[in-house]
Length: 332
Image (cartoon, rainbow, N blue to C red; front, side, top):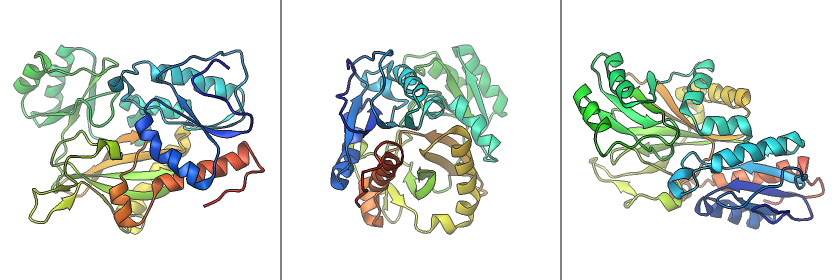
């Protein structure tokens, strides 16, 4: 089969991605559980659409930031592959609907609002003049720009004046989104300079993690994206860049947000995802991102005694037993 993976005779877990660094911890978790898997790296290869897909389950980990690693058209290729798999009735984890959310915040925000989640006021613009003009919609209050198709906080800049925004957009430092859509969004001040990321696996809450943003917005929890220092020294007491929140599920925020986030997952066909929110000075949560190519920070997990990659591997193994290989006995 002329594709960018080596199909195997027996059913397996096929991991669709474009970044080998991000899949390493998951593959290690598969090996620890004795689960059969196939590395399907879409940074190269082709696909014969007339052929039948192999047997197994297919986990889509395509990233909105693939273009930053030279894989500009990997999401488009993934969309076609997922359609091919789904047309043959294969079990796809995070299918085409999930991919649509991953690569467009414009698609994410209506889904969040339908579930009753607050989203920061946002204007989408496709040209420099419209980006600048969007500032006037926020009554002179600070805004941030961000890419519509992004990852790791790409394109996030803070502006407190229309002039500052205009100088950026018309200057050499302007970094447009790969899809040509720049978002201008109301800036929400976090009193403690943190955001919260809520992780779900199989639509069940894994944990929530507090993320320090005092060093900037381009944050990625994966070990290969680790910050130079593991703690932030801006506070009187050092704090970790990523910290699993104890008891989030039973907190007032957890009881409010988790069911609504799960409703988004059910409505949009998401199986694995992370939702990011920020608390304003009044303690009101604003959800601003859904990440369907989720990564986890091993240092934070080690301190909390949890392993989301382990949970993810177990979930995928269970799906394989149900949909691809009933004879497999899940270990671990």
